[in-house]
Amino acid sequence: MVERKVVSIVGAGNVGEHVASLLLLKGLVDVRLFDIPRQTEDKVFEPVKGKALDMKQMVAAMDIDSKVDGFTVSPEGEGYEPIVNSDIVVITAGFPRRPGMSREDLLETNVKILSTIISKVRHYSPDAILIVVTNPVDIMTYAAYRLSGFPQNRVIGMAGVLDSARFKTFIAEELRVSPKDIHAYVIGGHGDEMVPLISMSNVGGIPLKDLIPKDRLHELIERTRFGGGEIVNLMGTSAYYAPAAAVVDMVEALVTNSRRILPCSVYLDGEAGEYYGVKGFCVGVPVKLGSDGVEEIIKVPMIEEERQMWERSVESVKKSIEVAEVFLGG
Image (tube, rainbow, N blue to C red):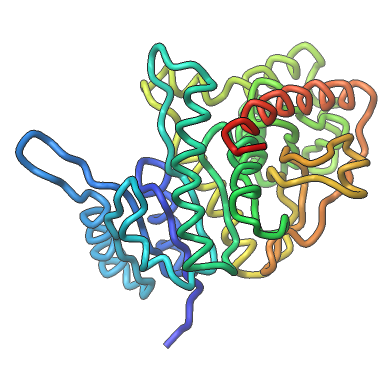
């Protein structure tokens, strides 16, 4: 019998359930899903168990041996025992921003949710690698790092993989080429201040700036920066297919020890922090991912224009981190 790594996913909403199904279809890992129940006036539903059962039948129909189970947990942290000995824990759980809610209110709420989850992961799976998806992802990744006490190589935020995929999509459509031949990184904070590295981007080895006029390239960059908002405006909810695929990309790199270089939100300090002008918080940079998590932080060269954009992005993340410190007891 094949011994598979165990990936636990906390939060079985749109992103979490799609991460689970994509991982199962690859047949690489066994999956455990965790989420809270849903209650109506006269009935308590356990959707996480229903989704897991549905996926079990899906993999059976496709002759895939991966296992999946769903577990209902309480907001207070009861029911997390089955997360024990997980190799990777993906955290998508969080509270969406509601009308009238300030960013500070949202941050406080999601830090509380994260704190409960992290305490259980730390107790039951102290050697796990954490992948944080909950927004605002750079701040939540930093919170997970602080709350877990895990070494920085084992706390990773999903950000730049998604942003880079969006950028590649728009470039591929513009040039009518395969995304496979496009190499483009997006780094910095996962938000409006993200930084596409145009100086390093190429299509089949040809510099991107030689293929797309500057004005048009600027339009593609802006569309990338607001790519999440475009999807929200079209379907009334945030994206989940592409974010889930981005998480799976990261999980596959970790499980197969492929040492892929992917842009992720990680804690920066020391020599890498000095190079990027960041000391003691999380932001998106290219990293080498292997079986131990982040094996190396890649120091990418930037032209002056990119460096200025980078500094603005870092400053934006830093201000949000300062707000989060209040809720983390910093």
